[in-house]
Amino acid sequence: MLQCFTCPKVYDEESPIWRCECGSFLVHRFERTPALEPRQIVARASDWWRYEEALPLKNRENRVRLGEGVTSLSNGVLAGEEVFLKNDGECFTGSFKDRGTFLMVSKFREWGLRQVVEDSSGNAGASVAAYARQAAIKAQIFAPSYTEPTKLANITRYGADLIKVDGTREDTAQAALAASRDSYYASHNWNPYFPAGVKSLAYEIWEQLGFVAPDRVVVPAGGGSSLLGLYYGFMELAETGRTDRLPRLTAVQSSACAPLCKSFAARAPETRPVTKGQTVAEGIVIADPVKGAAMLKALYDTDGACLSVSDPEIFSALEALEAQGYYVEPTAAVSSAGYQQGLQRGIISSHETTVVLLTGRKKK
Image (cartoon, rainbow, N blue to C red; front, side, top):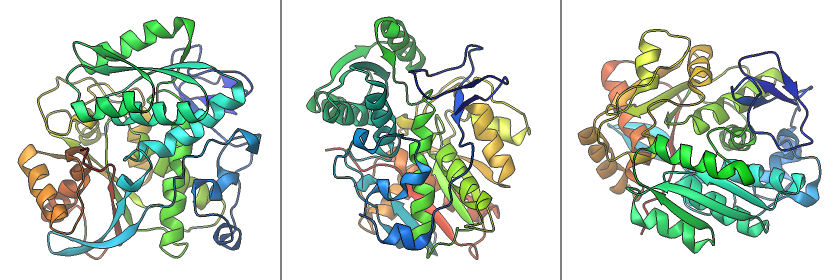
């Protein structure tokens, strides 16, 4: 079922819907949380559908696949301390956004959609374009005109119609929303199935660590897809007794645009818009995240943290990652910069089992 985050309204999953009548966003909930057996998982194909019980899709024939597989979890060193680096740059289109898109577009196929509209600053647009083409769904992607050209090229390479929008990221979203009057608004920031697909990240980390949850997971945070996917996934694992703890989820933002961190520091129940500055981490520059209240709840419920990092810190993290063979985009290095800052400030302990998420590879 789909439950409104703000009001008591509940919807079934039979018809296309992306937000509540009250204007708030929706969250997918199982009436009974599925429990996955480790022996079931290891016997299956090495892709995200190995966690199929946790993925809300009624008919298996509607699955959309692009050869995506389990991404690596490797030992790394940041600020002289050993950590696990989860490299989602290995995803099919080069970013973790594929985790949300593979389920979201599969649901579109189940609904019988033939055309969708999405707004994106790059990675999500390329992901939706690729999976929509595989599902024979026409995609129209609106992107800010300032977006890195290589990211825009990937959108058109995958066959979507690209519309560049002058102005802010928020202007782009409004343009897409207006265009969706004759289509379906497939916004990854609004759609309830997107974070439900990103849950695969939590299940995958749990499996790769020997079916044990880590002490902490550090992620970049803009719209909150990775943060919420991890939160929902680890919550399900805890509810079904597959883990006895929730990792401390640690969100990292650019200091040029950190609405989540400012609200977290004030222990506020929801985020408030901020004025955006310039940063190399363009993928997480969201001044007023749609799911800000849910993001804060995820941090509060897991005794987590929120850290903001400067561009010099991001560049330093990029160099440290490249020295170990990881060629990621600046936004992906935000989590590494946050981990190093967290160590220095005593917010993160070197004794914790910590996973640092690398969200996307450098585009060529």
